[in-house]
Image 1 (tube, rainbow, N blue to C red):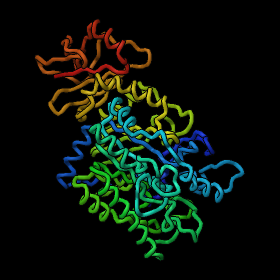
Image 2: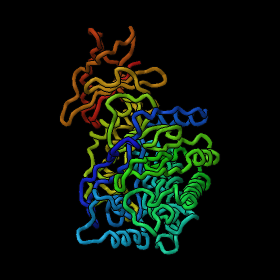
Image 3: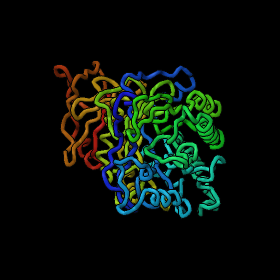
Image 4: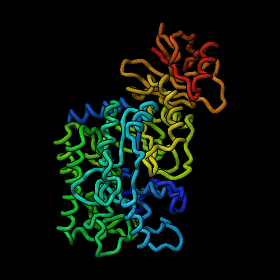
Length: 483
């Protein structure tokens, strides 16, 4: 909760950080205030883009930076909050210095964004969100505002033709007709006007009183605005500005204590100015000032979780394929069945599903992740009709059956199959009563199925031919079309 007591940890930190250690990512910013109502957008261009974004449904996120060299959680290991663990026997000062020197050896010569885009497209994804800069402040684009960037002279990769990484990623995904999202961290732990060198860095927040050092804070705000101006003017069309670091906001917390994750003073980054600037460069841009609320959070982003019920505003679950947001060796990836079931649950409740994979230090997607995405894509290739361009429809979900509706009016019932469960001979659709003469078929087959209204629902009989075909073709879920 922002300004109303202890904040909520949004990512569980499950393993001790260390060089090459497998650790789940942590981003412990506050959740949006429960009484901070969603404010609908009024700009018709933004509303049109939001509707298009809601049609895409399935997105690809990539957390990538110099931290991938060590295979540790992105950024958070240099934050000095006491819940973060670093290797035993290493001082915070020494660790931070070594971490911040990682760009000097970062040389991902295997970086091939066209390969990334193909993997994501084959998985059935329709938009991409890339980390242009995480909290550690290392810019993965050719910014003119700082030397702490991928194209700096002391970074070995700067001579590579693809050195302007964010531009290369956006271009590659744009060629595959993806929507483009730019992740950008509002806090910058490398910038001297955020974590000032004169004082200690007790937690994630700016380490000086912005009420006292107003000119210094204005300098930092100007830096942020200039970087966002670059991203929205020099990198082609951008659909989403995905702002992270929700503790950087205009709210004050007079009762905050050092180390609580809050500071008494506001960290007003001037969101009206950022939004106006970004939309001047990118008309209709979706702005996501996540975990803050208010008029600059065009859609909300529950992290690593799915709401129990549909939400009354646009939303997106962002979730990792494995345990970590950034690359760690031997990450544990969710099964294709699990991802398909999560995707269906999200879409049935009216949300989008943004699935994250962290590329490795060489710039390649882990082979195990690529294989998993291919399995998901095989299901999406057949069943995408029940996912893309749909909206929620009551009863949304009943047990193992989820419902979606196309803009054309067709309704889809998606039956989730457990591991090893055979395709059933019939499916019960509670609360569904097709009109007389309605046609029901299995997606992937034009054969009309027999159905019968029984009490408060409908029972649909599946033919043996359809059952056999589905059992052999990615049997994670069976999708029915009710026209």
